[in-house]
Image 1 (tube, rainbow, N blue to C red):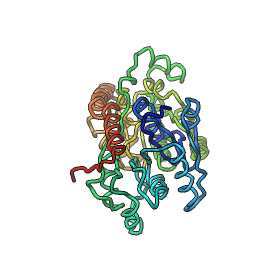
Image 2 (spheres, rainbow, N blue to C red):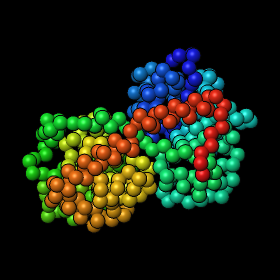
Image 3 (cartoon, rainbow, N blue to C red):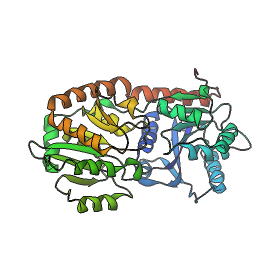
Image 4 (cartoon, rainbow, N blue to C red):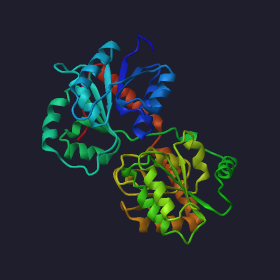
Length: 380
């Protein structure tokens, strides 16, 4: 870590595998040579945190207790002082809350608060709106990963519109190019036979991802055993998902692949990508699927309509609508031409709107402005 560079402290709930956590790692790697980066986790270090430790990054666990833990603010303040932090980049509201408290009675260092998604259901809480007036300093800034998140921050959190900038999540689109040989290799490893249609669902196994709806859709596809579902991910819902598969005898068409660190390699084996969430920000997994030229079937929640254009790059359903999801999967399974058309459009959309080059450039500019003590205002 260079002593000549400004230091950014990324504050997160944890560095387990998830969209915000992956992005935090990417910000740090891409900023190398321009900014130093250290990490503070409220709850646990996690898989990504351990990988960062192995790469020589500083990662601190703040050991937050349930409820309000005033000691976390004290520990974070000490951590920032010890590492001469110039900017705190807080991911999600609770890390922003503790980052704000750690500065009192002053307002240094400035905070960049990035909101990646919203709780479900999302409601306005007057006490929090009141508190936010004092938590956000004059030289702090907010970014939202999508327009729907920005709207929620204005309406439900009471933040001023001119303090919030939308920066869409981005990926290295070129890294998701693949060949027919790559596809054939992975399909062989997964036992996908010629003529079978492989549908991939990549998400943590937790209630917000609503795997239950996807599984109910597969019950409706019993008459189409050539359509197979592959669930990639792990989490607290694994046992209930396994029980559902066993109870409804879906073993022949539904496979659990667990937590994988080679999703980029797996995706070319798919024919369709599925996401059945009840709440989302701007899902990286959908962007990655589009970059792989996969047509997407998804619920139309959160920022997903900003990513998937219904009828152009994929097919959208209401949350919890297993009938519609099953119909969309069947339609795409029966129409290879439609799959190719939607997939090609999705690839172009990923290239045009969700490249990480623009994302990183904009975050670096904000870091530089905050380090220079500039106030950032956006058009309302």
